[in-house]
Length: 145
Length: 114
Image (tube, rainbow over all chains, first blue to last red; front, top):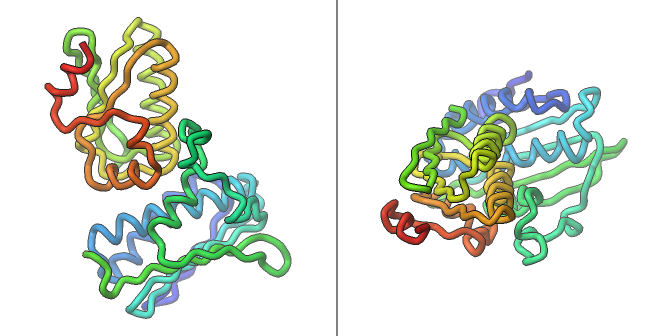
């Protein structure tokens, strides 16, 4: 794990769900550093967790030989979160709408909707050399506390 | 804090008091196994009290949906009680408020399950 103090945090983990505890710990440090309200901290933790689980399960197909990387930074006005995987299991515009009546009772498929609902910017790009890069931005100045 | 689940019974309704985090892994497994066990014992009416659930992720939501369909497919009822604002917001975003019957008062919920 590498820290880039004081305003950015970075973590690279093998693609195992057991590694998510380290993700939650890093997010805890970041939200403390950025002095976020409990409410903002909650939604930031949830969206990061959803995006890292997506990277591990869908991007990297839970292959522990592949890595998922999380970067969190802030300029004081907003928080930028970047999640990278080595697989790229989906395209944002191809994700089925979980609120469609046909999908409402399905047990999965709501993670991207949750991310998009909370974040102000969400984009997914292909990385050079393979894999995907999910970039999310949340404005924190003037956000409801 | 991982999820804690306590069950109590009022007549033929099983009230499951959940607290902590309902997330992928242990939290969802605890709920699934308890409901399957109760269904196997003949219970068909469930009220999930989420008053002390402060965090739920998309897997947790998925487990609520799975529990709902499993119970309904066996002719039973599964309703929700006392959502926190965060859980309520997630159910709103995902339109799951159109799936579940939600109550703020336990006695009112029980009345609808007789």
